[in-house]
Image 1 (cartoon, rainbow, N blue to C red):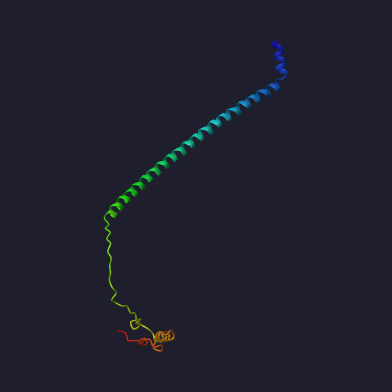
Image 2: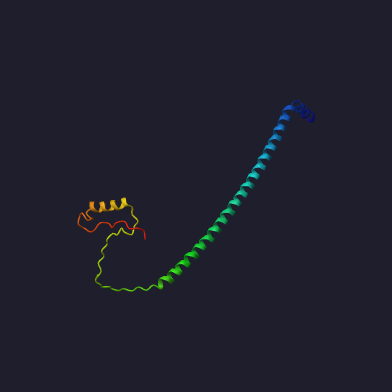
Length: 147
């Protein structure tokens, strides 16, 4: 029986060598896949941990900023309430008669005018019915020497 098995192995040694090589390669492939999967899971866990830390830090910062804003709003509300409580409202009725009448007349004598601008102003007053030709006042005074 053993002799038959040895003869059979001798006859099929190429087939058995191929089968052994296949088992060896399959074992190596499975080992590489397992190591890669473990590395992937480890990396995934590390990335998730960093993400969770960043989210916790952002929440902590947001809460701190919200507390700061709330304190500022409370301080403004307190100050506003205090300032508004000091306001006094008085109602008075004022009855007066207007006594003064306002009359405006343009005076160009205080400006430094050139001869040409002076003539243009008088021509404009005459053309618009506000000058001497229209019977409503005197001409623009002549150019005076610098004081």
